[in-house]
Structure formats: C-alpha cells, structure tokens
Length: 244
Length: 114
Picture (spheres, rainbow over the protein chains, first blue to last red):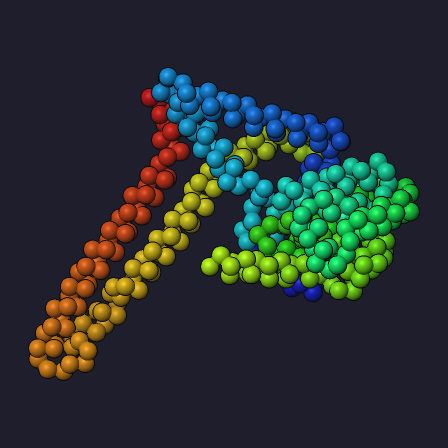
C-alpha cells in the first residue's frame, strides 16, 4: 500500500505515479450501456447454467455446475468491492486507482459524467447530487443539522445557475480524475479498504473548484473540514463496542 | 481499450483470474491467519515454550527433591499433551487447507476428464 501523507497531493509522491484511468469513461454512452447490459446478461446466463448443470444427471456436467456455483459464490462474497483493496496496491511505480474504486462509487461518477456532458452542469455538483441518494450521506447531513431537502434544493439551484459552457469530454474526464485522486487520499487517510461513496463526498468538500467550494460553504461544510471518515470510524467503534 | 467489446473480453478473463486469486491467495492468507490465531490460543493454555524453559525448575518454587521430581513429571505431561493438541490443530488446518486448494482443481478435473 502506498504511504501517503494526507497533507500532500497524492500525485506528487516521489517514485510513485498515481493516476485514474477507467476505459469505460472513454466509451460512448451506448458503449457503457452495452457493457452494463452484457455484464448482467452474462451473470444471468451463468446463474441459469450453474443451476441447470447442478441438477443434471451426467456427473461431468454436475461438476461443471459445482465450479460455476463456486464462481458465483465468490462473486457474491465480493459483491460491491473494487478489483483490489488499497492495501494490495504496490508501493511504487504507476498505480491506477480505478482498481480500488467501488462499483457504487464508479456508478455515481458515470451518471454524473453522462448527465454533466448532456446538461453542461458542474461535474462536482452533479456528483454531490447523486451522492445525496446514499443513506451514508443522508446520515452525514443529518448529523450536521443540515436539512436534506434544503441541501438538495440549493444544489439544484446551483446546478442550473452554474452551467459550464464549452466544456469538452476531456475536461469532464480531467475532473473525474481529480475527484477520484482526492477521494483516494481521503480513503487512505481514513483507513478504508476501497474508495467508496463516502470518500467521494469527503473529496467534494475539499476539492479545488470555486463553485463547489462556494456551495459547500453555504452549509459551512468546507469550514468544518472533512470529518466524515473520522466520524464514521467513531460510529463503527461504537457499533463494535455494542456488539461486544 | 476504450472499445466496449474489448473491455468486456478483458473483464471476462479478469473475473476468472480474480476467482482463482481470491480462492488461492486470499484463501491461503485466511488459513494462515486462522491457523496462527488458533495455535496462539492453544499456546496460551499449554505454553510449551515457557514450560520447556522452566523444565527443571520445581513447581510452585518448592525447592525440595520431591518438588523437582514432580515438576519434571507434570511439565513432561503438559508438554506431551500440548504437543498432541498442537499437532492435532496443525493437522486439522493442513487437511482443511489441502481440501480447500483441491476443490476448484478437482471440480475442473472431474468436469473435464471423468
């Protein structure tokens, strides 16, 4: 796992080149849709095949079914996880943080990316809008006495007021990379296994973007700094204490 | 690589690799950690290393001949019982681990050749 000082920019570590590159963001909307549809169809076919083979009377086919069932059980056990945990990343060389980005977090980025390209909305605020759909973020807002409805209404207002004119697809990709790299730093400093939606939200609070900073300052979130990972750790500690 | 079909093919093979990585690399780490954990728990009961270090010392610092003799007898018994338990736990883990690593290979072998 790379050692990263939370005060430093993750991309400026000596001997380490951290970047974000997910081929799906280079595809067209139709291409990404194709990837999703084919993935789901493949899983459905594998589930049906495993079931059919398991009840087969031919021993060879039954063993094939067992293997497919093992494969599906493994996928189920690692559902919602990224390709690999942060601790398994190498200490030096080129590191693609797309490998440690959870599917839910990527889904948020993907939707914000597509909507942003169509509407020319501020990408970071579009991500914030998607993130408010997650219970973790809702809980976070409640903890700071921020009314969710007001937060969303103001966010919608900011989105329509701050339309980015003339932004190209590459500009949006640059913003995705900036956000994910910042979220990576947040995830490392919080000791998270993967970059999750909470890390994206933490990154948004600290991201170098004037409009986003102004929006979060409305709720004094920028001034409070990023306390989400620490808060979450406290919740987890409290939870484990009750379990014990 | 920004082409959907090539991405899907790459992910297909990655998922297969990922399954074996989870099974063998992560699985081996799990067995190693569990085995060390259980052996450490057993060691807290039998404390073989400490018992060996104090093998010739009398029990409850009773420095008479009978105390020394009894100390050696009790400690020998403790070491023997501990060694048997250690060996049993280690064997149990070894057998479980061998079964674990054989499962995917065996299913593929029977699916293909039997």
